[in-house]
Image 1 (spheres, protein in one colour):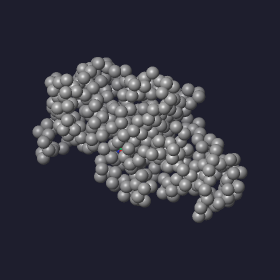
Image 2 (cartoon, helix red, strand yellow):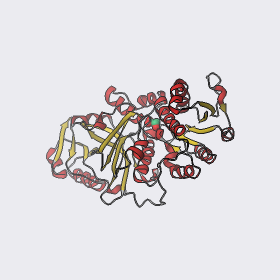
Image 3 (cartoon, helix red, strand yellow):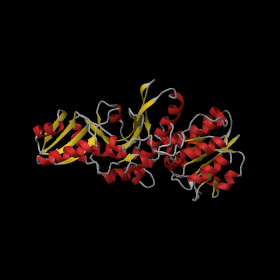
Image 4 (cartoon, protein in one colour):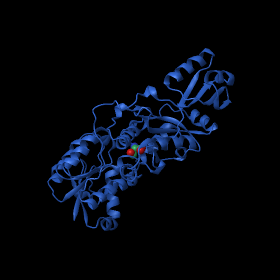
Amino acid sequence: MVKFAVLGCGVVGSGVVELFEKNKALIEKRCGQELEMGYILDLRDFPDRPYGNKVVKSLDVILADPDVKVVAECMGGTEPAFTFVKACLEAGKSVATSNKELVAAKGDILLKTAKEHNVNFFFEASVGGAIPIIRPLHKCLAANDFTAIAGILNGTTNFILNKMIKENMDFSTALALAQEKGYAEKDPTADVEGHDACRKICILSSLAFGKHVYPESVHTQGIREVELKDVERSSELGYTIKLIARVQRLENGKILPTVMPMVVEEDNLLSQVNGVYNAVMVRGDGISKAMFYGRGAGKFPTASAVLGDMIEEVQLDHTIPAQTWENVNSTDFIEDFAAFTAKRYFRVSGEDAAALNAVFGNLASISAQDGETVCITDKEMNADDVEAAAKALNGKGIQVLAQYPVLVS
Ligand code: HSE
């Protein structure tokens, strides 16, 4: 018999407990032994829930029980999660976490601690909710030299954008609905400002390229500025606006991770990912492209990934898989955002196609309506090129009202 504990009984933690109770018989069959939910650590009491008698207030109770072999960390945030997870690993207990903030900020330390104590630090639930992506990257796709990862990694913002596009819902109503459904972070600014997607691309970049990428090194822009008008006008040209988390390996060998709204061509699969669904596209020299898709947030999808990690731990019984990266104490391997280039979507004042052609050269597409023009440039532009073009257009009496990079994946 193996006992487990759950730290934090919020949306994900209660999902772990409830999904385990629901599927206990088949989980035990797959593990080849009995499992017992030993403890739930939480500041609150849950007298009305069937597992209310399992609640403890001190981590020491869990640390002191030698039968607890695996701990699910579902508290969120870096502290006290980091201290608690480190203590569990040092006490010889493997940990499965859904906490991307923790993995993005402290993954290198926790992976090292796990290795030193011959236990595992698992984090499949930290990226893409229910989607298996961590294990595929470090196991099934381990033979590949990765060149790019691009994805929709935040369910809340994808849900909001979708409600705005399809139902004309305003931003705050859509956000409130995402919170009600349990998709959003405790502080939803982490979703809206792109920080949550940033943490997830940090984790995928670290895993794919072997060096810890910290959130501070990633150019991050959220969806707050996205106007309904651009959502509508970009679709006239056959594009959809999505919050894209992406990392590319450049020709100079450095990597360039970014999070920002981008316009995605409608025949690109990422443009078809709607609502709370996430998708991750991985490029590697062996596979060319592989795509992963599923529910990116929510109680049971995330709990499913946490429990999957816990089941693997019980099956493996402390065999360490090669899931790791190193802290190189340098950001030299990360390219500056100034080097980022892409074709661009522009929305500008006026309907002067000739002036736009004169500034941008040939345009891939253009559409004028109601005194404004939208277009997609044929050439790739960096931030300086965008600024120079805006100045040149200004000289012709044209204002740039919005611009977004075009995703090529
Ligand atoms: N707030 C996150 C999202 C939860 O909306 O994707 C899953 O990490």
